[in-house]
Image (cartoon, rainbow, N blue to C red; front, side, top):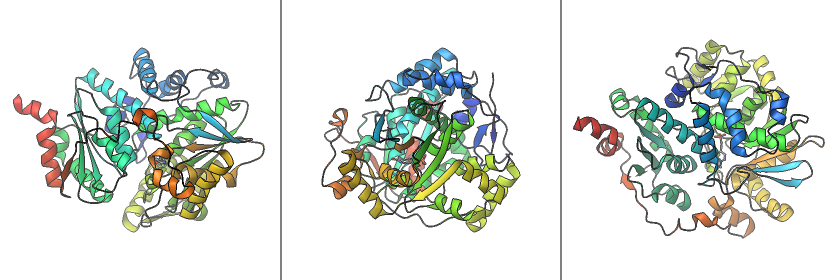
Amino acid sequence: MPVKYVSSRGEAPALGFVDVLLAGLASDGGLYVPETWPKLGADAIAAFAGRPYAEVAFEVVRPFVGGDIDDAALAAMCRDAYGRFDHPAVAPLTELEPNFWLLELFHGPTLAFKDLAMQLLARMVDHALKARRARITIIGATSGDTGGAAIEAFRGKDNIDVFILFPHGRVSPIQQRQMTTTGDPHVHALAIDGSFDDCQAIVKKLFADRDMRARLALGGVNSINWARIVAQIVYYFTAAVALGAPKRQVDFTVPTGNFGDIFAGYAAKRMGLPVGRLVIATNQNDILARTLATGRYTLADAVATRSPSMDIQVSSNFERLLFEVNGRDAGAVRGMMGELAKSGSFAVAPDALAKIKADFAAGRTDEAETLATIKRARKEYGLLVDPHTAVGLAVAGRFKRADTPMVALATAHPAKFPDAVFEATGERPALPARLSTLSSAKENYSRLANDAGAVKAFIESHARTVRAEEKA
Ligand SMILES: *Cc1c(COP(=O)(O)O)cnc(C)c1O
């Protein structure tokens, strides 16, 4: 059954899954959502119990692909992608207290939950390019986790060149080494003499360069890509089923930045999973918690915290929820986004806010509470947790209910943020064995000026797409 995707701003053509996968953002600046939500019945959900993660992934992702990728190929990609995780369950649950669980999403190759989406996304992109005999040049900016997860997932693909910009000297040593030690000549880590915002501004400029965009077939991998959300729906199903769904409701708390991960939980609910409350956990960059409390979405300057992957100003995927709760009125979404661009703020209509609050709650933490939570988790549960996970645990504690299991998502491995963990506990978490060579591997990266022209020149002289055309 073909599935169509529509833009939240209503002025881009409806596309099938693979076109949405390769496009990322819609041409009208909107985000793609499925025209209708696929449903899974109670029997289908119950049948997930005890099945391997890769098989559940296939069942959950398949209705979104709508035949654009054939079943055998999709099943193989799921097996391959999730066969690379350190834990046989892929996303195991750990009991913290009665009815309070930790969902460990950090057993992938780069120790962050982004691997769960990126590993499958890369295989789907590669497959689609081969089918179309096409090539792509991936360009992205990272403050740390996304770049590593993308490089790890996309390296070694014949039809894909990867260029990731990161702020020189401002990512953690582990994050940098994950990007610079692949040894793959077609993966380029570019250390920019500037901030993360500078990196992102350069990437935006290059994407706006129509000639370059067409010639190099530029593609993006940021968190608004619909395929990333789809892959993240899977672990809501596996976790809830392990705790008694579909017979029982389950609540989730999600450390949130761009709203991609928690929107996947909402999507699972729309598909028929009995999700109770979805709790948004933020650090001091609390735009979403403020929006739920006040009904106004108002930008503020991003503050640097110990949970940097949540240090965002604009929560991009929230637009998808706004589209849903405004009755899929694309004109209303365009109005809000126009206001945001003009004045840095917009109001959520009262009935739309009521709908958001029917499914979501929100809470924020400050740095002291985050550190105190890391310390408490060590003492009470005997666990070292990373600062992003700690934000979630702190907020989950306020919202857990006696009769409903609460699942807090653990989004990064503690060894990825050793300084914060040490600060809170006096202990340094060990890197998993398979990453033990990371600190001795040879680094390879190019240091470039904070200048779009310099980055463009570098990419044009290194991307295979351009060179192939020049030879022709
Ligand atoms: C990206 C990230 C988040 C935030 O996820 P969103 O989908 O952007 O809300 C939280 N924790 C970690 C460790 C991350 O890398």
